[in-house]
Amino acid sequence: MKQSLRYLVSAAVAMAALFAGWRVVGQMQAERHASSDPAQALRWRPADPTALLALAERQLAEGDAAAARATATRLLGHEPLQGQAFRVLAAASERDGDEARTLQLYRIAARRAPRDQAPRAWLARYFLRRGDYPQALVQIDALLRVAPRRADKIHPALVQLAQDPKFAQALAQSLRDDPPWRAGVLAALRHPKTGNPLAAGQVMQALQDKGGLSADEYSRWLDSLIAQGRWGEAYARWAGTAVKPNGRLPLLYNGDFAQEPSEAGFDWRRRRVPGVLMEFEPGKEVGSRIVHLQFLGRRVPNAGLEQALMLAPGRYRLLLRARARALRSEMGLQWRIACAGPARVVGRSEVVQGSFDWMDVDMEFTVPPAGCPGQWLRLENPVPSGAGQQVAGDLWLTGFRLKQKPE
Image (cartoon, rainbow, N blue to C red):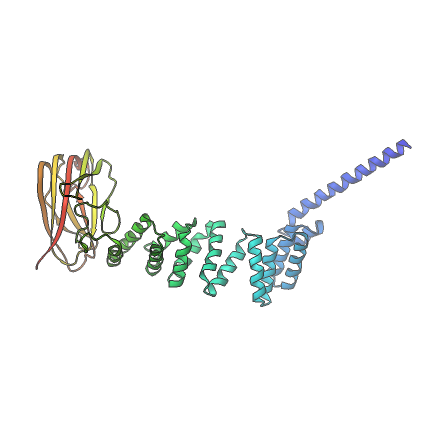
């Protein structure tokens, strides 16, 4: 009796092991064929979710919407929360022309499978066609978060869409929330070759109006306009926000450095140059300041102090105050005014070097009627390159004024 019982137990264990092994083999075969041959995978494991989804997608691709719907429904019977099955049902409904049902199913698919890109892309196109730009951008935002590699195609599309003022406003509102794709879109808008001036202007202005444009982004925007040769637009946008101490903008802005240079537009810019230290000191007049440049005996092509100008054709005179102490270089330093266009350099000051107390420095120049849409004022080393560019000593500057001379 005991021997028979042991035999039955052993047989049951063997059968259980055989059944478990067969299930493992079936699962392995189903996994092996789930994507390449879903029908065969389902013969091994009839409820395999990967195989059911692959079969439904294949049926849909072959144009059999009814079979795809049946397979997706079968999948949901085993896994009710399977979001990708709702995407197949949505596509099948679209084939049938049921727009309301299609929209409903794609929305469910996006909620159930938030990382599935197809529902997001469909919903984005749907809302774009209907002019519901805020809803479209919700989907685009989600798409760019789960698939940032798609930015190469989506960003140019956003640039083109932003030519529509309504879309530009909606895009600016989305950018205010600082999504991870914000910097990329702003760079695409500003790009000198592939960007769009109209779109960039509308989005940047909307951001600025909403208080969502940082100082750095504002500066980059103006610089992009200047780089594109659109000096008039850059100046107009900068002038609208620049502080006007006496109610008007001088030809050379912030000449006494009373305000901290904004590094943007047509204000002073301080470039980092190895071998040059720059700091501000109080001036004699109330509110004025002096810029102190200390040169450390290294090769210096320029002092790192410059300003963009927007001067109409005509004759001008630049005046400033300077003081130096043991300022040594092969040819001294000089102020240079160069056109952004083909006219190139239009004015050079006398060189400054050595040691001297406060004195006036002036220069006269002429802006030609053509080839000079904008100008750059820079303190430069006239030595082109090499060891002769070494500069040492101290230079103090203030009281910049620019006057137009009568013809």
